[in-house]
Image (cartoon, rainbow, N blue to C red):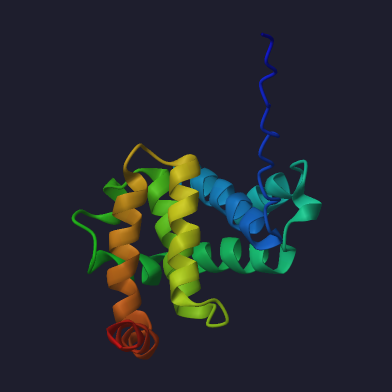
Length: 161
């Protein structure tokens, strides 16, 4: 008897959103900046030359890259209360991801805090070390409680019902 195996169709990965692409590109720029301390304008120009830049949310990219670099000291201060070592001792990938996450928690109030954390975790999974995403999740969850207390409390209250 001859049987034919049914082949499952290949799963298509969903297309990345424009915002996710902007986060990925901003992370690459922050990584370059954290390693080299280079000129922001040249880093920005370099990132804009990447294939696929036109598929990102360039306004969000600008806000993330420019904002994270301009406010790095303040963002690091917000992170310092929740990390177990100095932010300069973090891997550049996790440091960049945390900068993006805390920037979005602080400034992008149109993005729910859970989404900001989840997007940072996804960045850490894609670009960071093996368990870096767990660290990012824990740090940003604590930071969210401080930066968006009403939103966090409302979510916890809704879960308690």
